[in-house]
Image (cartoon, rainbow, N blue to C red):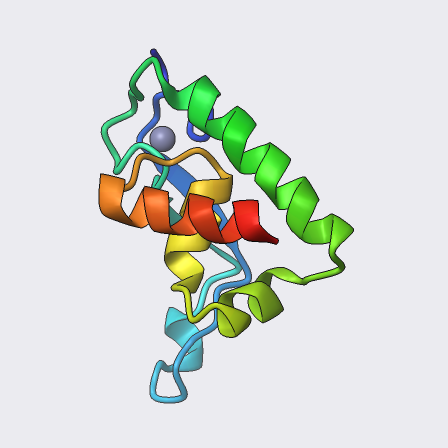
Length: 108
Ligand SMILES: [Zn+2]
Protein backbone atom coordinates (compact mmCIF):
# COMPACT_ATOMS: atom_id res chain seq x y z
CA UNK A 1 0.00 0.00 0.00
CA UNK A 2 1.01 3.64 -0.42
CA UNK A 3 2.86 5.07 2.56
CA UNK A 4 0.40 7.28 4.52
CA UNK A 5 3.22 9.43 5.88
CA UNK A 6 4.55 10.72 2.56
CA UNK A 7 1.62 9.69 0.30
CA UNK A 8 4.00 7.71 -1.84
CA UNK A 9 6.23 10.72 -2.56
CA UNK A 10 9.12 9.11 -0.66
CA UNK A 11 10.07 12.37 0.99
CA UNK A 12 8.73 14.80 3.55
CA UNK A 13 9.14 18.46 4.34
CA UNK A 14 10.90 19.37 7.55
CA UNK A 15 10.29 22.91 8.79
CA UNK A 16 12.77 25.09 10.65
CA UNK A 17 15.64 22.63 10.63
CA UNK A 18 18.32 23.10 13.26
CA UNK A 19 21.67 23.90 11.69
CA UNK A 20 25.13 23.42 13.13
CA UNK A 21 26.99 26.67 13.88
CA UNK A 22 29.38 26.30 10.95
CA UNK A 23 26.56 26.37 8.33
CA UNK A 24 26.55 29.86 6.75
CA UNK A 25 23.35 31.90 7.00
CA UNK A 26 22.90 31.92 3.20
CA UNK A 27 22.72 28.11 3.17
CA UNK A 28 20.03 27.91 5.85
CA UNK A 29 16.48 27.28 4.72
CA UNK A 30 13.08 27.49 6.38
CA UNK A 31 12.15 24.04 5.15
CA UNK A 32 14.06 21.09 3.81
CA UNK A 33 13.07 17.84 2.14
CA UNK A 34 13.85 14.70 4.07
CA UNK A 35 13.60 11.07 3.01
CA UNK A 36 10.44 9.55 4.55
CA UNK A 37 11.52 7.44 7.50
CA UNK A 38 8.26 5.50 7.85
CA UNK A 39 8.67 3.76 4.48
CA UNK A 40 12.46 4.22 4.28
CA UNK A 41 11.91 6.42 1.21
CA UNK A 42 10.30 3.64 -0.82
CA UNK A 43 6.85 5.28 -0.95
CA UNK A 44 5.14 2.00 -0.05
CA UNK A 45 4.49 0.16 3.16
CA UNK A 46 3.54 -3.42 3.96
CA UNK A 47 -0.03 -4.48 4.77
CA UNK A 48 0.71 -5.07 8.47
CA UNK A 49 1.32 -1.36 8.98
CA UNK A 50 -2.19 -0.69 10.36
CA UNK A 51 -1.88 -3.55 12.85
CA UNK A 52 1.48 -2.24 14.09
CA UNK A 53 0.11 1.31 14.24
CA UNK A 54 -2.89 0.18 16.34
CA UNK A 55 -0.53 -1.55 18.81
CA UNK A 56 1.83 1.43 18.84
CA UNK A 57 -1.02 3.87 19.47
CA UNK A 58 -2.59 1.84 22.26
CA UNK A 59 0.76 1.44 24.01
CA UNK A 60 1.43 5.15 23.56
CA UNK A 61 -1.86 5.84 25.36
CA UNK A 62 -0.81 3.51 28.15
CA UNK A 63 2.47 5.41 28.49
CA UNK A 64 0.58 8.72 28.64
CA UNK A 65 -1.86 7.29 31.24
CA UNK A 66 1.18 6.68 33.42
CA UNK A 67 2.13 10.32 32.80
CA UNK A 68 5.41 9.35 31.21
CA UNK A 69 6.61 11.69 28.50
CA UNK A 70 8.23 10.16 25.49
CA UNK A 71 11.72 11.24 26.58
CA UNK A 72 11.24 10.16 30.20
CA UNK A 73 10.00 6.77 29.06
CA UNK A 74 13.04 6.22 26.82
CA UNK A 75 15.40 7.36 29.56
CA UNK A 76 13.76 5.26 32.29
CA UNK A 77 13.98 2.04 30.29
CA UNK A 78 17.18 2.87 28.46
CA UNK A 79 15.52 2.71 25.04
CA UNK A 80 16.47 4.42 21.82
CA UNK A 81 14.38 7.53 21.10
CA UNK A 82 14.43 6.64 17.43
CA UNK A 83 13.17 3.08 17.99
CA UNK A 84 10.39 4.00 20.42
CA UNK A 85 9.18 6.79 18.13
CA UNK A 86 9.22 4.41 15.16
CA UNK A 87 7.41 1.74 17.18
CA UNK A 88 4.61 4.09 18.26
CA UNK A 89 4.15 5.24 14.66
CA UNK A 90 3.86 1.69 13.30
CA UNK A 91 7.20 1.48 11.54
CA UNK A 92 8.52 -2.02 11.00
CA UNK A 93 11.48 -2.73 13.29
CA UNK A 94 13.36 -5.95 13.74
CA UNK A 95 11.58 -8.58 15.87
CA UNK A 96 14.01 -8.44 18.76
CA UNK A 97 13.55 -4.70 19.25
CA UNK A 98 9.78 -4.89 18.71
CA UNK A 99 9.42 -7.59 21.38
CA UNK A 100 11.66 -5.74 23.82
CA UNK A 101 9.68 -2.50 23.50
CA UNK A 102 6.31 -4.31 23.65
CA UNK A 103 7.27 -6.13 26.85
CA UNK A 104 8.34 -2.91 28.55
CA UNK A 105 5.04 -1.24 27.67
CA UNK A 106 3.02 -4.24 28.79
CA UNK A 107 4.69 -4.18 32.21
CA UNK A 108 3.92 -0.48 32.73
ZN1 LIG B 1 6.79 7.26 3.26
